[in-house]
Image 1: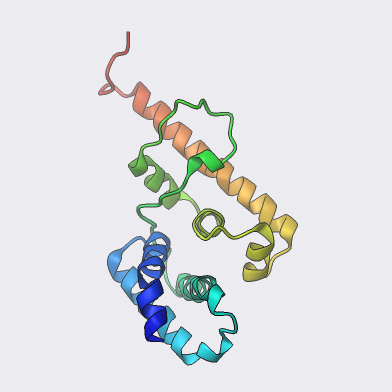
Image 2: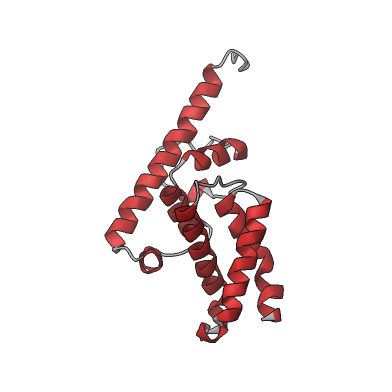
Length: 170
């Protein structure tokens, strides 16, 4: 168990922080995930898959917490928008703060599926298994989540460009 904590605590904490949006909640979720992992250590049959196993436990803890309380905000997502297919121009830079705000505005199920796909690098099949959904459902939900994220980012960029405080361009 000590090796699991030493090897995976930073990654588990980062993922918890992205899901929950606050340091305190991320610490609580990380601690809860490792406690559950310790209780169920015999379930880890392949040590090479320990990271994915811990992420699954963490995600389960997060989703249970969501059902019990009000939605939490996510912060500081290092989402690679280059992987999101879109009709955007190549030279558009996405402001990390705008990205985070747009993610926070998404429903929890959209944010969760985006995080699973981009942060955990989970395949459609893996996401379907983890969330107990059909693969077609995962594909359509991910597509809609990407569209919603793009819409929010686009509307923020357009609003910022039209605001009186925006610099006049020649």
